[in-house]
Image 1 (cartoon, rainbow, N blue to C red):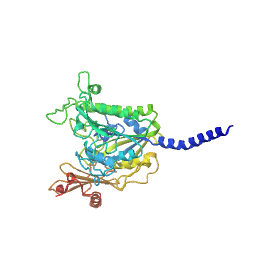
Image 2: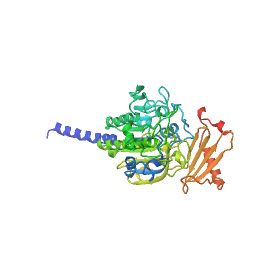
Image 3: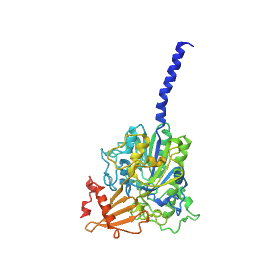
Image 4: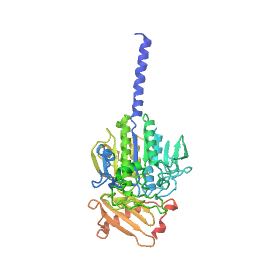
Length: 470
């Protein structure tokens, strides 16, 4: 064989050998889809509550084909601070945003999306942001998102038939008109599915903080129809019509039926995401996470008691009882997350950042509160864990909670009144029915010390609660 032919063959072989690891390395970066429901209760999924009246087979399947966590916690009991904890890896003792607000996160508040973006990920967010308006330091294109479509703040997100939304393209954010006859959630889902199709050949991070099943309870007629009888009455009687009367949300004759329609729509959407991932051949390299930003709401005619939305838990949104902060978490990733497991390990939103950077081999952040639970996902023995968890919230009065093992202490402080403590053993009392503060003062003292240790003074005066303490 001619010498030049040998040389050509040798060069081709060497090129293939050196090219293969690079290609393998690129393809081995897993895609991540992180779906966050808005105000979905722990008991609104049939896999968490056998008394649920609304089947959720697609969401439940994420857990049966992956792992379902039963002791997973939101960052807070309302949306903006919960999202801050999720994206910055800091709990409420250290996070900048500690309450529902329209303040932006700061330039120094690095986010999970920025870290993944720096590692070559295409990043997209579709739904509700809540951490900064356009033109501020917290605008989504500044905080790591290549694409965005949806609402910038939680107040605007109450209107599902708004005449405008926001969009990020090519590094710029724009206010764009929206057809008021189109349910915004449907448009948000269309953009999310399009993002997956467009980026199927690249590693991508899809953050999908949808706006349902929050109020307003006004889904499209086609979604309501399966939950109404032939005469237009609800299949979930008795119904108490919700009347707007100048309030935030639209009137709804059948709020129970509307809520059922929203849960079903959300479940169908998750099924669409699962089906698309399989259709595109991405199934074996994609993590799908599903959770909620806090507990169930009681707004706009919503009736969490009727649907047993918090399951065995006490409390709803705006409470630091378990019903306000314990949320579903299901994770599916064939070949990466062994199927059919249920875990009672305790994790929280501030653990998402280090877990995702661990999964993707991305640079992580120092000085955060989160711990990676990647080993828990893969089925390996999880060594790293939390010594304790901490939350704080103030709307009218101060609430603080610390959880250490199965012991949970909640502190209540109204302005001008003495502080009050409630102590619960979640191992024997998940419903927080028996306050043990008076019979176990030693545990109250121990956890009170931890509560003080867990927090730093709020940097922004909007979250300075020193007046409440007096």
